Length: 387
Image 1 (cartoon, one colour):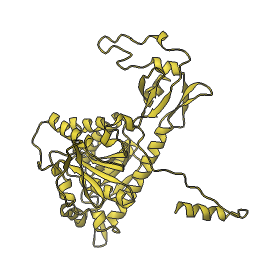
Image 2: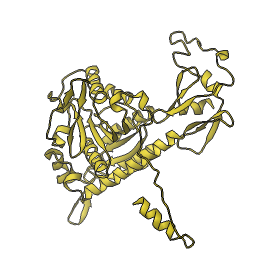
Image 3: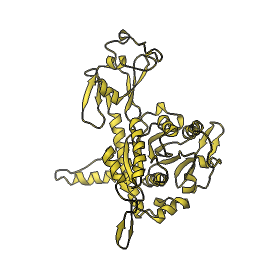
């Protein structure tokens, strides 16, 4: 389609006689694969769907978003991170309802439904877990990192409600590309969602969209808002999240969550599917934008022998001397963790040192490899403050 349109547009120019279009775009690839467990190394984007409050339809949004992305041609997986009350086994109907183990690699083989790969504690044969928080964090870590996900364009993580150990474990184990926030119109929902947005902000995970569920229903030619209005727009305004999507109260949407067939698959041309199509387009565009910002955020300019840094979400740029960046390392290899004494001395770093490689790592950090083999991880925000 792109090639055809490019030909048509350029040929429409009066002085053009012939057009030869070469398509050079490549599918997005993981930009920090080396730092990840083997099972996650071929996943291009990891999107968390979170509400921090139960009962708002977060799992419904996560599942329908995943199947919308799959319907757009993407390779998609869903990870149900709720061990206490897994929803995925009810919302989808895979033929094989038990996860299998690869005996040689000791890895988990996900089950599949309608072309989407699925992993949930509910597919482990254990039902719902009764265990303490640290054990749950370990189970989630094992399920997520030892699964043979293969090559995926998007892994959608259905986050459990709350902002505790389990959520922090997930955010630390995997480099989340972005988060989608789910809420309902009530004020109480906004209070809980605000906590989640602040958690993602501290963890440097961009929140790219808000989905306000159970907003309204139509009857007798009128639109009614039984739970009030404004929670979603309040999140957008207060936290600067750019995109808001409304979902109506629909019996079919609720029933699809219990029937094992996602609404967007059951009625791909309906109103709900159209809303999820818009959300899917938003997720694709915003993830691509984030990846582009990260991949061009920090580069080494050999002509002036300086590290050029572009401030996230800004046109501002500044330059840093490589030796200064290396000397400012605060890791355990450079600073004694117990005493705070500086182990790396100023004179240990040559004035003319140059980085060998700069690689994106997560959404707001880069990994810099130096000639002595040392790999230094630096947050772009720290870069900015040091400038």
